[in-house]
Length: 34
View 1: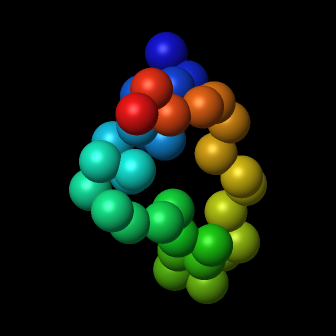
View 2 (view 1 turned 180 degrees about the vertical axis):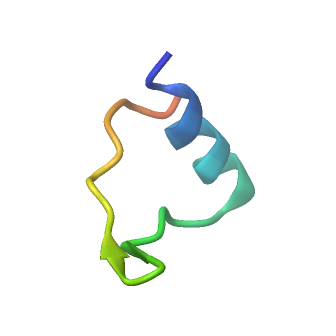
């Protein structure tokens, strides 16, 4: 289940945000299926 977000982000060609509303985000776990 944790591989879905990395796969979607890679397919969309975007990186995960480092900061959202001034809050530093934890690294995304998992590996892209792509």
